[in-house]
Length: 438
Image (cartoon, rainbow, N blue to C red):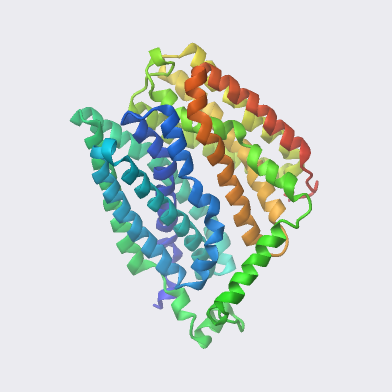
């Protein structure tokens, strides 16, 4: 069997599982880890929010992934880089008080490798599969990315919590957890080295390329680097010439402001002792709350949101989804006041919030697709995702300082005030009434 005829079942699930894991380690698990290692809320929020930066600026080096080597080479290489980075992170954790700068640099290396891996994986998916199989496997890739979310936010955190309890040594527990992540990624890297089809290499020959594409095509390798970069510059400029572009950018930056401000403080709120205003949960309980119940509710909300938008269209869905995203944040204000000790209440509140967020986030994703329509829609969508990452990074930089100044109750009151931003930007945008309908 030719390498490019290998069934996608061999590599699509593992590729998108591998795409999700480092993202959640960098942007979610790092918060819990730093909190358990004794870092203050202001510092951990600022440090971990800056880790979003590679996803903000990844469109700037996207053309490099197209021009230099193959997407397959980038995928395997970035997975190898992340394998080494996880191992070095594990070794730095027991000495974090003296090696904090080194630990943060290693997280940045992981983040840049992960963002580059995202670019390569999505490009490879479109090259390695014909349009029919792209449609057939789009649900599979999304499912395994969600599985990575459960594994990253749930299984890994729970494992660290179990090791904390059994070893009685928090740094050692996180060291072993990261070493296991490194070993897992080493296996994934080796597996993909042998299993990923060499589609791009095979299609370099004109006859093979025409057979795969079904028509004459000009190899991107034959284009000059300068022409490719000039083309990218024009694509970038055309984005900012779109009608209502600045309103769209404001929408992308502020629609999720309540979540962007609160997300870095949710794990510390769960983990901080009751006397400090938190809920006093253990690491295991926190992992189960967000990594299982939270992710399942988020997924169900997203599915229902997709069905709702398909029936009524984006325009009619906007307001229900905006309110669904913003108002459930009130559960954290309730928990900060009541500080419930029954874990089922925490599960119920988090499930309600995450379900609402999953439902409301659908409008955000659909609007980015809507705004990206037209020539260069793939590149324009990538720029939209950069603004999406920026919308999470900037508020997170100040979240810890605000929480320490206001306390958890005052902080979650401020989060509720930020819901007004969601309402305001939803009022500003204009959408084709027929967009998104069947």
